[in-house]
Structure formats: C-alpha cells, structure tokens
Length: 442
Image (cartoon, rainbow, N blue to C red; front, side, top):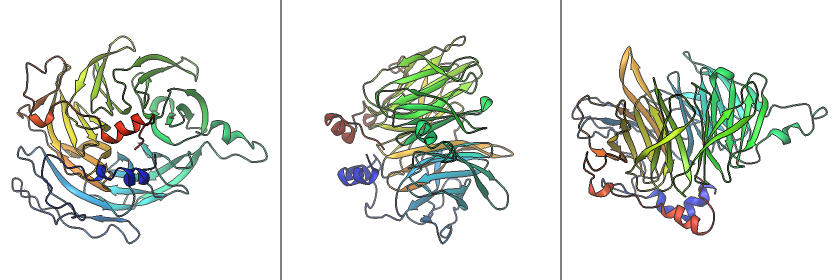
C-alpha cells in the first residue's frame, strides 16, 4: 500500500506515544540542543545542509539515566519518508521518495551531496567497498561508484537489467526485470553476485561484472521483505509476508539455487532479517508483525538452523533489524528502538535499553562501530514515518546490569519484566489489513 494512502487511512501511526511523555504534539521542529549533564558535551547547531536540500538539522540530546545512549542529531525531512539507510566509509546514505539519494558525513550528519537518478522512491540501498546499489520505483537497480575525499564524487556505472539495443534485443529487459518493487538486496562478496527480492515474490541473482541475471526463482507466496547472504558459506536467507523465513543454497558449479530449510513459527508477516556471526557461532534473527524477534542458531557442520527462542518487548510490528558484534538493534511500529545483547557462548539475550525519541514507526536502521584510533562505541542511524532521521551514540558500560530478559528458556529464572513490557499486541493497522485479506506494506 502507498505510504501516503496509509498515513491518510491510519494517521494514528504517526502519533503513537511512547511510555515517556512527549511535551507537545504540535512541536514539529525539535528543540534547540542541550548539554548532556553527565558528559558535558555541547552539540552544535548547524544551518540547513544545502540550499537544495529538503532537510533541516536540529540536534537533540536525549541522555538516559544509565548513560548508555545519546541522540546526537535529528534531521527532519519536510516531505516524504526515508525507506532505506546504508553506512559505509564514514558516510551515511539515505533513500526516500525523492530521486536523490542523500549522502551524509558520520557522525554529525553534515551534507556531503547526493546521487541523482531518473526514478525515485528508493526502497533499498546496499554498499560494498566503493560501490552502492539502489532500487527504484521503476523496478530497476542502479549501480554507483563513489569516492571519499575532500569532496564526495559519484558516478552511475550501470543499471539492472542492463540497457540493450532496442533493435537487437527488444524484449530482453522484460524477461529479467522485476515486475514489482524491489524491496531488498544482498551482495555475495566472493562471487560478485547481487541478490534482489521483490514484491513480485521472486528472487533474482545478478552477476555484477557483466550485469547479467544468472538466476531467477519464485521464492515465496507473498511479498519478499528482506534478503541476506552469509558471506562465510554463501547461504541465502529470505523472509516474506507469507510468514516464513527460507534458506537457500547455491548449487555447486551452477548458478541455480535450491531450498534447504523453511522456518515458520508465526502466521504474521516477517518484515526483516539480520545475521550475527562470530567465530564458531552464527545466529539468524527475524522480526515479524506480531512484535516478536525469533532467533535461530546454525549447526556448525551443516546448513541447518535450530530455533533458539524469541526476544519479546515490542508492542507492535518489528520493521527493521541491525547487528554489530553481539548487539542487536530492533526498530518497531511502536516508535521505539531496542538494544539487545547476546551473551557470549549462549542463546541468552538481554535488553540493554530502549531508544524512544521517534514519534512514528521506525522504518529502517543502520548500525556501525564508531572508530577513532580505538573503538569508541556504536553509531545507530534510524528513520521513522514521522519523517525524521536520527543519529544515536551507544556506549555499553562493562558492568551494566541486565534490565530485561526475553530468552525462551531462562525468562523465569533471570531478570524481571516491567509492566509495560508484557506480551505484545498486534499492530492495529496489520489486524485491519489481515481482516480485509491483504497485507500491509511499509
């Protein structure tokens, strides 16, 4: 469903309140920056990024009592929403309704420019090295090269499916082009393969070197919402509004793919996936419209994944996930972002904190380490359907006490669940769409 139609039909989703009181609902522009009472860091106010930009920059400090996080910047977009975020090489890329993919400098969000395409509504962005892939309203994927120097420079180097001579191949694009929006992408580094998942229920594999579609297969019975690839073994993961997560394996010496496992533990749509790998452990996370985050652990000697439990805390649909090391970040329709930590060598997870600065559903996330000679902490970038883009600085304290425990096996023995963190309820918008026999697409 179109986002603008959604906002007209369900305006409540841009006015959901968190458990922290919001002083004024009519205050669209955020307050002037404040000093963090604990660290004494002043966040400087900046002017509009550039004359042509639809953004204004108004940093907002949001200290927590445990000093785990601060919101160090908040951008408000005057029209449209952000659908995709990617962070790479000290830059952050955001895709929205616009034909321009904005480029920001980490972590203070200084405008570095943009990439201009002929089609807008950028639903997915993916970066690898100095390459950027973007999907657009015309159901095509653009490939860009960019350089990071004193000035940001970019160049479009190709389109998928590639343009061909009309006289020689009049129908070539029709046979390889997705028939609906490309919602997600994943890149397999060692083979140079780009995977794209679409609302047309298919997955396509593209060889980037010659921009050729080498495989296309029907993967699900409904929209494909997220796709991942394990860089260690090439396993492909897809999730869908049909309520399932599927694992695919590329046939050796061939370009075809075969289904190895189907993971399905809930009837509600699965909106997002994340993978966390370290040494001998690999965990797969999936966020669904019932507010749950299910996780699976990979067996060491095969492609099989075993269900390890679920993380419970979000009240509405989980729309996006991101992982860095043993931290998992989840964004939800309930307007909050939760930070989870997996205990080393076990399936036990704890919720470290809740970031609740947004006033609408958190649509997408990106997370990375903050480096300055040594690791300083984590940077989390979030975009919401309240038309804001926020930057969070996360610092995990070494002796931080556990605040929540949602492990399936240890929930009774460790941790205490607070009253407002009890069992989630279904998103009102999703329930209504379910009753109408259709699914809700953010």
